[in-house]
Amino acid sequence: MTHSRKLLLTILIVLLFAIGIITSFYFYLIGFDPKAFLASLHVGLLGKIGIILALYIFRNYLFIPSTVIIILSGVILQDFLLTAVVSIIGVGIGIAETYAIGYLFREDITGDSKKLPIIGKYRKQIQENGVKIVFFSCMFPLTPVDLLYYAAGFIKYRFIPFFIAAIMGEMWLILLYAYFGVEARKYVSFAVYFIGIFLVVFVGWWVWKRRGKI
Image (cartoon, rainbow, N blue to C red; front, side):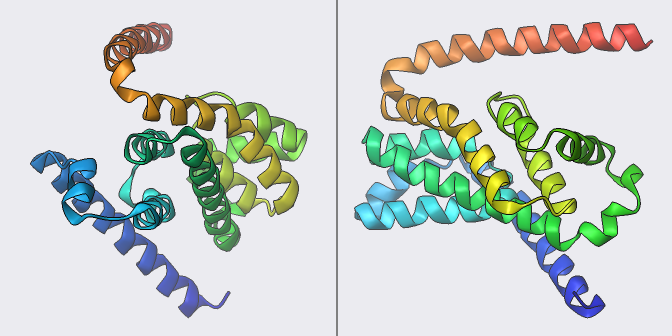
């Protein structure tokens, strides 16, 4: 890739991230309700699917975790099988997109892993363990999988085995979140308690880790 094209692509990505931050912050401030918004527009099924897939395409720039979009898809579509299929396609698009960004910028990162130590760590693990580290890492919801996908692109890891390992690793979480989205009304109280307990455990773990470093 020429220097001018890389510069143009970098500017485009930075602009998309800036728009994403501003948009996400604005929606948060106004208490945006996507389900009510779509209902007011009288959007049909294909239109809803199109909007959901667009969210998947731009989720990196809007700073929206795929988990949120999967659950939101279930709330909007109210059909588990359809939600699962759309979510698998959407997550697959996100995996390929993130890998592609890492692939395009691999020359800037490969020579200096100190720039992004976390990605450098994943890059080393992928080089040593291949698809196994991708598959098992994607199975855990707390893994920063986007960094894993960037790292795979940086080292120019073979795309097809990487993609299969990533989508299969995320599969059970996709199905779980799709179910929670469709049955969201039944699990509101459960979600609140779960998030509360998770935050308490996470904060306790973080404090314990920090105490060991002081």
